[in-house]
Length: 247
Image 1 (cartoon, rainbow, N blue to C red):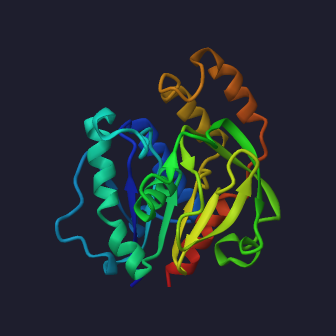
Image 2 (cartoon, rainbow, N blue to C red):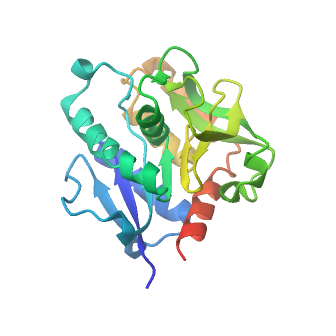
């Protein structure tokens, strides 16, 4: 019997969380029965959580920032972040299959080098950006089928400022040099959204238009721009992750 994938969601908005979850299933080629979904805004991690019981861990995005001062963080977002951060020592030490998407790269970077994630440089406007594989990325199994250059959806207030210790850069871009990283053989994180398509990004633009990602009055223009983007290769990363670790 195939082990399930553990999907941890950090979004406290139901519409955004449900849309992201459906995208993980669709782009990963997963059925609801193939996963254990935990919305961390609604329930805590089980006290007896055993990572060996899962094929891999997928962490989604969220509106919080790991680089925000502790006393400035929303209490719910801080509690959610702390739960995921609590898993990282075991995940990294044991090289547990992990795919952190968006917020997930901040979690990984902050665990490996506190302070390496900040808003100093490399924030990205909401939309799509040109990404490129690095030399290591060209041979990485999670990027099989992904061309040398491709478009991906982004939109972040913070980013990894330098290469975290022990990691290998797999994807880069003009706005943000560290778009995808690997630690060891099985721990991965992306700054861009491998699960996102135009419909999903339109949903997020509506939900987060007052969260400081962009001037609210530009939401309609952003949605129109997103609708005209050709973003189809990032989802292969999810599909490859599932295929690699589901056995």
